Image (cartoon, rainbow, N blue to C red):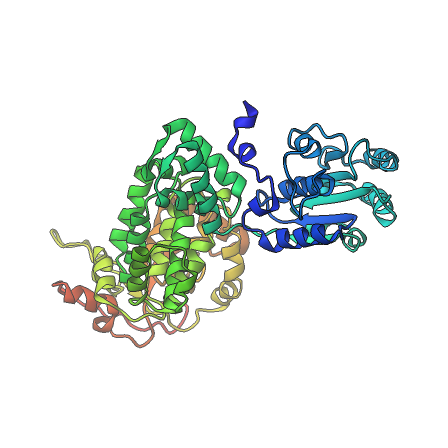
Length: 528
């Protein structure tokens, strides 16, 4: 039954059948045709790109009894023996499990003997970088003065770990990751031969998910065929791979471009509710943003998409600046789900930060997104009297930083970035520092309380959460002693009048109205 595994059943048997490595196969074919075969070859490249398969084809070609023009005949006795793994003169060694010096010494003794039946004795050493240093030096002695009947084929995914003296004695061939077209072409051929019905879009989804590894793609195709039968749909491929449909990714990118925070968070919430893999979703999102960047830069030829998809991407790229795309790519590209739980918080933070205005101008869409928060005004003066009955609580105020408030504040400001760094790894998601880094600033010390001004209400509200506030205050006390309490305010741009804020303008455009504006006296020192 093992022979029915797709990656073995459809293993290439000639150099012409090796997919996506023409720069390697053509050189080897030329060497075979003119009879200039080297004594040592080094095949480097990612997994599943054909290194070991090419080594076996080369072993057949040099020993083929039909003496074909650079290709094995796959019909003679030697070719059949190699295909069935019964050739005594073609030895495959797994360096990961035979990595000691004793194993290599045994090889050195046996390589001296002439081949049993073949013309050459071929040693294929897989994952050769796993050999110990002593074993590598022992192998080097054999590579320096090999017997004329021996050919060594070394395969590795990490050539930088090999001794330079070994590298210099081998003909090196670098195997590349297969392009999406090459993977789709091979899978399409397998589907035709196996009677599997799968749309080209499904094949492209598989090709994108395997990062250029044909073996991985063949394994995924077989899993689909075993689970769903010979009639496979695109949604079934998405379910097997744990990815979401392109329309959700496209929808989220549209919300980034339009600045619609509420709708974008709704898309992320629906992805979580449907139990989709957030890591895969983020990966698809980064890929889509890359496509938008390529389209924006005029590199449509590099897009691995259909005509309709390219048209959609170009239409979206026309609405956004290159700087905005780069900002979003950096934010989502930095998310590492391996170090966290499967919370959607990293995605939500990256999305909100990608949407929030930086160097971009304000827009009505961003105003709509921020309409969920109340109209910002200056912070009201404190009152010791009770609040009048029926009077609504005032909305969160923006804070205008005044002059320094003494040595305590200066000390905190000088070490603020170091303090924020200590919050990394703190919290249920391990990213408490993300709520403070680059968006917060200590502006005042009131007795034992540190006033921290935030650029955005989203981050301010998170730190005001009692759970997170206690964590911040504990770290604050640990680092500075005093102040050891935190009060959060919104930062107002210097010189900005209350009615000139972009959030106020956006709210007014949506029909809101300012009921009152309270000016606060300027702070001239550490005391109020």
